[in-house]
Length: 386
Image (cartoon, rainbow, N blue to C red):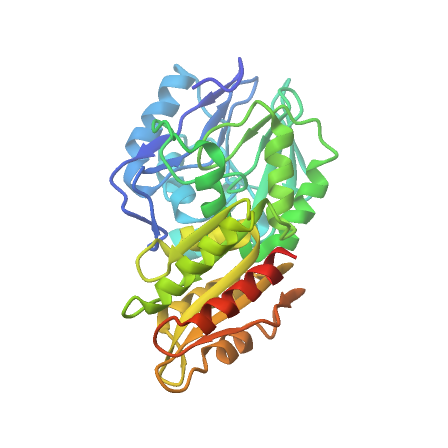
């Protein structure tokens, strides 16, 4: 993969991985991106996961074609990007390591050394001259680790964006869903808590003339950059990406499922443009999280369980609140055989969330749907679509 005449791709695709960061299902693998900038001095941008060090170094060697690397730029110390720093140092002993001060502290913890004799410490506004290419560094704390830097190359107008703008999936996988689906699941799963930090970086990026975005995961972005920047702005400001209603439910014996399916039917008849209905016990929880953040309205339906909320629903709400769920309309549906209390318990879990509109209509069911339930659903649908 060629980024430009002087910037080459040397990353790897991982098809052995099943869970990214030990929790995110990645059936289409994962890409660990790395790049080489060829100039009077040569910079390698980031390393890759520990299992692919030899492949990565082989890729670097092929691009260098007998030349020596002068710098390894470490933008992010997470292990899928930093594990081969020592192998790089052994292969290119004269090269310097460029990173933030905190990144070198992390290297000491990870490798037992902070490579003091090789350090080039950079921060906001620092530059590194390679020749034609001048690299400018942008601090990006908590996007999504505190030591992160991003790098702007003014020659080819490339923003090396660390984990920003990344997505799940290997680069040799032709994703029929396009960029947004797995990028959204990646963003809200991993970065979503840190919207304010992403907003700060986007503000810095707005002052740059960017033609290419080169992330550490997923494809290099070189066309219609406004779309990607605008989408990241929506996500990080907790805005509404798509018109529609997300409905998340749990159902023990199928009665609550029948209620939400009826609600979806009513909403469709009343002209709702999009309904995303998901079973929290059976579907990828992070797919459900991304839908909750994608749409402006969310309905949660669950069984009263142990005098509170069904465990899978409790887990889901915790995922949302942990990621600063806000700027949404939320409605509740409860089911309970004798004493339904889930609506009140769910509402309590959102008490610290900002700018949520909790709808007045709260549907309450005792075991199975009745004509009264359907009347409540009609009322709720009207309130949702008002």
